[in-house]
Amino acid sequence: MNKNYEAICRGEEIRANLIELKKLCKDPQVAEELLEGEIDPSVIASLLADDDAKVRKNAALLIGELRAQEDAQALYRAYEVEKTRFVRSSYLTALKALDVTEYIDSLQERYEELLAYEPKEEEVKHVTEERGLLQQLLAQSGVLQKHTFIGWKRKNDLIFTTERTLREPLKKQIESYSKNGVQTTVHPMGVMVRTTELDALCKLHTYRELLHALNVKKTIVGTPTQLAESLMASNLIELLESSHRETAPFYFRVELRGITDPAEKGKLAKKLAQELEQQSGGKLQNSTTDYEVEIRLARTKDGSFYPCVKLYTIPDDRFEWRKRTISASMHPSLAAALIELARPYLSEDAVVLDALCGVGTFVIERNLRMKTYDDYAVDIYGEAIDGAKENAKAAGVDCNFIMKDFLDFSSKHQMTEIFADMPRRGKKTKEELDAFYSGCFCQFESLLATRGHLFLYSDEEGFVKKNLRLHGDLVLLREYPIRPKENGVYYIIEKR
Image 1 (cartoon, one colour):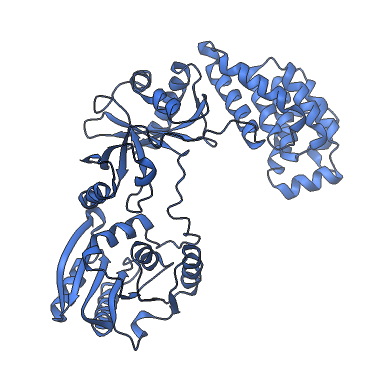
Image 2 (image 1 turned 180 degrees about the vertical axis):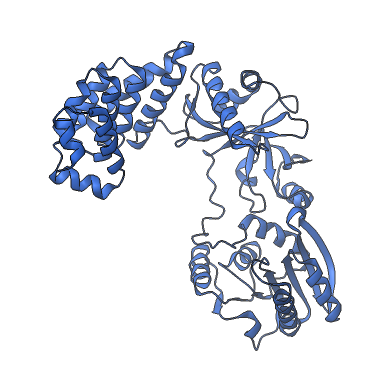
């Protein structure tokens, strides 16, 4: 028999032995073995009535680690009568590991009671924790109300985020897709759009994220209390209420950008979330797991914050085809944006090659933008090719995927378009990378038809320019610095 459990049965150092048992039971297999043969759960449950609050707390947590369903009723009854606030959360933490169907109505009633309760200053921490755990319990039981987005035709102020160099092309694309006309301006984060056509514009593939702007005076500043006051004075609540069929509360998280110190970031996010809960009168409820709203604050150069909102209630199925990825995968929104830059050079008669295809991002997005005559994609890694095949099938794209070193690839077909996302240097030496680029450019020149186009994304400008000098048939038409901090440049090259 477990020595810690034996000591508990003898009444020796109960709290310390509960803690040791709890540590052991972090391993689910150990917990299962102890529960099956060595521990009588009723003995642990009896400690929920102990005079020592910390004994009650650790007994509750141990029951949760053991997943002792037979103690669920004892846990719930103890939670109901518990007066010490820091212990109440322990019962709820334990109940999260058990089936609470029998008690769900009472737990929901308690949750609604806490939503309406205004805690004293010294109670805020424990009331917030208890309410959060109740929320998680209700969410995992499928009880919490989910919100349905209905703000498709309201006048929305939106930010479509993208890379700096891609803002103007995205702005033009949004304007061209709009049927009723939109107001667009370039924004530091992408493109700001005022529109009543969110339902159509959100389907574009060329932006990274969709954010709602708030009507504040550019930026907000101050303590967490002052930041919350500024947010509550904006149209935040009106935006949430008018954009959803269901009413408050809305479950949110705070996301801070531009703060590098994790301790500072965590402290500010926590305090701001508490202030928003209090100042909203319960209409906003903080949740780190089951949120539908992200309140994002991006720190600017002068130390103030630019606020915006990301609504997870807006379905985003643009890249549902992306079933498989690898670490080097290009984000499909970037691939789509680069293809948009290439659009003047694309045709439906194209024979397309994705030269270093990975999981097929380039060739799939190329086909979704404009159909082709035929498609080929090459990669040396079997895992990547398997993922590319699965992704292409999900996207409804027919492509010939070939597992082969691109430097050894040959084809009887001349390609009219070649796309290549060149790999990062990684552990390669300068000499190895030089040889790789040299081999790739020989292949590009050999495989590409006259007047065909090469669309190359690379962070090695020196090797690209060197090989363009060595291969006179390949003429650089355009180059776009996409990610200057990473030296990422997009080259559009024609074979003459």
